[in-house]
Image 1 (tube, rainbow, N blue to C red):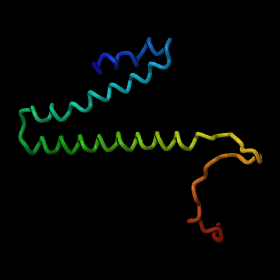
Image 2: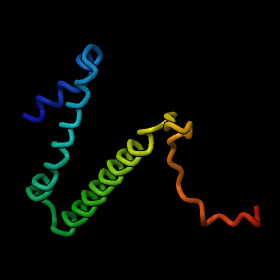
Image 3: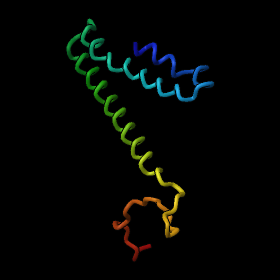
Length: 103
């Protein structure tokens, strides 16, 4: 099911229907089958443990990437927009850690 949906989010289809690129997220369902694949492998348990650590690290990087994409989306929501007083609605990170005396 998910594999068929993943095909809709690639190539020629997204050229004509840009919204279908969302279906490319279904490719992530293939990644979550790694656990079953590692469990069924005919290798020593120590090697399976190493593969599970690699898998966990990969999942962690996916999580960090998703959080960074979400943060980027939050930060650009009001890009180049002004409120009723003419002030730009940018969000700037706090810079209270800067030492203005040294600069």
